[in-house]
Image (cartoon, rainbow over all chains, first blue to last red):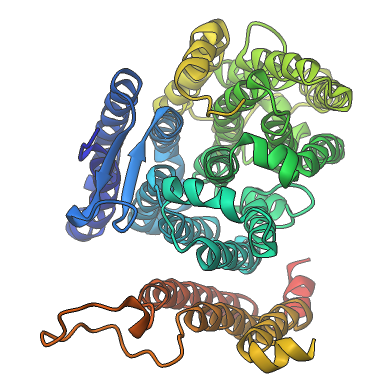
Length: 490
Length: 122
């Protein structure tokens, strides 16, 4: 069905990103309401887009009236609709949370923060909606540029990690572009749907194989998949606290979406498991990534660095789910992706709140939350339990579906990897709890502690609510995924 | 091997430039030199795309009003050029952002060598 909704979804945050510097130049206080208003509007429109796509089939928009495959096409189907809702809602909550933090740590850079955040969200939306491999590249780069700057916006130490992120990210994007070039040389098209029709004839060619390898390598750098995660721990540790909930929750998930789109929609399930068995390799990579990420997290003293390694581990689990090659595995991977988006936003949000109130950055420092911030501590406990996989949280059901999918596929190494990862995750979060509750040497009087600002409390509360709600409503979400997301060919 | 050099010299040039770019990015400690490597790598990909469009005995893809019967093989493929125009813009903005970061790093640490910056961070 033709509709202008996909273009609209990109236009809302993009125009807000342009309006903010213009309006903010005269009155800086208007930046935040404009950004939040645009994101509320975006969330509503993306929910409409998802429900339309589910009830009426995919919505597509042709730019300039040129019909695809010659023209550029943007599509909302079940998968992109779901991702779009996740991106818009989580980034809205992340920006609500960022309000007090921005005033404190980025006081002179309020305009760039809001403008770049919205540009980042617009680019992520463009990546999710693009039905064209080259368009995907352009939005990948716009989004990456915005996130490099967001990592380094505070200056100082974060600049070097932003610079390294930029260098590695550019290598990733170049590899992706090169892969697209190989595909284009072999098929003569860039439109994903058209390429899916033409690829089966040329699957024997070495150019397609090489192109797929380049694309997977490039996207793996962007998504921080072990062993190409080198940029991730430093970038997440030194990025300003106001940016990390947004960066850690959505920025790595969308390149993963791009991979899923290319593997399952452009190539198709049968090709990537048998003819070019890239999923077999990625299954092992994902398993190793999940275990190594969780293992490295155990040894981190810095709370944000621990969470960064935990992101590496989650990315491995999600990749493992997608590579299982069964419907349940695919749905479980997607469900865990959504759950991890919420959990990482909540955990980095807690890290931001702790550093806002006490300047706390190490795991031991978190003990101070116990005294004055019980609600933030509750959010930390619930999202940590969800990361470990305790029912009824979303993390438990995500891992449950992953294990069921692995058993269905009879891939026992995957079952072992998921269980070992859960145990290691339990180890580093329980180590954290032990520090929080067993530490006796707290200063009795906290100097000038303020009440936790309302936006922080509210956003953490909403995220925690959604973590539990997604767990309790997991049957509903899984039903939706099975009905309108699963690609053909299983 | 000799065949490739004879019939596809542009692919060989592309591979040499691409690897050279990555080599510079990995080996050099100077932040600006790394960016030079990055730019060489991006440009090599543009070379690769542009050479895809080349056809023997073809002309620029502008259709004159006098032409009535269109023969696609008479024109060079315009699409890779258009794609690379976009990629050039992307490359330039990446370079702009990265140079701004290098300037900020220089103001902070007074050096452009990565090892010296790491030394000063401790």
